[in-house]
Amino acid sequence: MTKQVYNFGAGPAMLPVPVMQQIQEEFLDFQGMGISLIEISHRSKEFEAVINRCDELVREVANLPENYKILYTHGGAQMQFSAVPLNLLNLKPGNKAVYSIGGHWTKLAENEAQRYGETIIVGDSSNTNFDRVPALSSDLIPQDASYAYITSNNTIYGTRYQSLPDTGDVPLVIDATSEIFSRVIDFSRVGIIFAGLQKNLGPSGTALVIVREDLIGHALKITPSLMDYSTYEKSHSLANTNNTFAIYTMGLVLKWLQNQGGVSVIEEINEKKAATLYSVIDDSNFYTGTAHKDHRSTMNVTFTLPNEERTETFLKQALENGLYALKGHRNVGGLRASIYNAMPLAGCEKLAEFMKEFERTQG
Ligand SMILES: Cc1ncc(COP(=O)(O)O)c(C=O)c1O
Image (tube, rainbow, N blue to C red; front, side, top):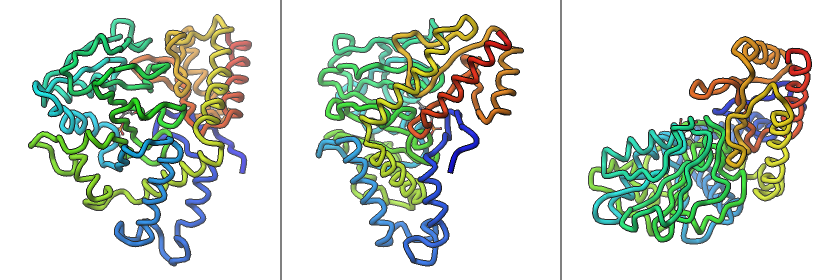
């Protein structure tokens, strides 16, 4: 099936077509049971096989070291803004945590942590409207901090950390919602990495949380049990009825990713996709990239046009040409092309051609 519409929405975002076809094919009759996956118990042997396979795929795709636990948590990515401080602040006396504020989502996470302890802001790029990520390194981090927190890819501003910061012995916590499994990282350098599923993994409302095992079991007394990582670990994320459809879909997405050649192959494709769009922006006096060149994301490409009127015309014509959801976030304005793992190179090429043609006729 060829896709008629390319979906550049920031999230919930497009999923790979073969994944959705498989869901459609087996929706009414899961593995010959005569009923749907969403109708069977989260404690059934059939669902147990689904979640076990999803665990295996996360391990394989991430090349995850043994001492990391895989949790599927409720409340999307934002619930982790509370769960992280509730679970980790207690690691060291003083209940302190370091935040490097590279955008809106990190600021929200830091606000949430303030409810439970002291936050130390070691970098903040708000004065340049988050067109870059603040530097973070071990010499900036007090060694009595319980953890150091970043958002590795800033969905709204189209920026990312080009490499993982070195936080020394202080556990690094990463919100990777808008880039998980889009590039190879060394998980052994991570304390916790989490992602809402709705961009690179599946439907919204659930998060994948990967936690180094020694960081589990330190939750503050006030932590609701359904936010305590040890509850998830002990119950294989089934303390209550989890979102079985989300976990099933994530398994299919990860299998698809593996079939593409895994993260290293998708990373190369992602770089090519992003370069296709950035080169149009860089070769033009009409489009202006909003992210600093050294901090650009390969997942969210943000740019502006000379004025509001042209922006509106661009969006209208793009939609008529099957290029959906390119409006930028209100904090940045302009346009944003979200090109997660599921976006094929052809979608970026089509957008690049459209951009060139629009500049030629409207520039
Ligand atoms: C980096 C990042 N963190 C957190 C969130 C919030 O996710 P959720 O709506 O699942 O809470 C988003 C949503 O776009 C995001 O891009």
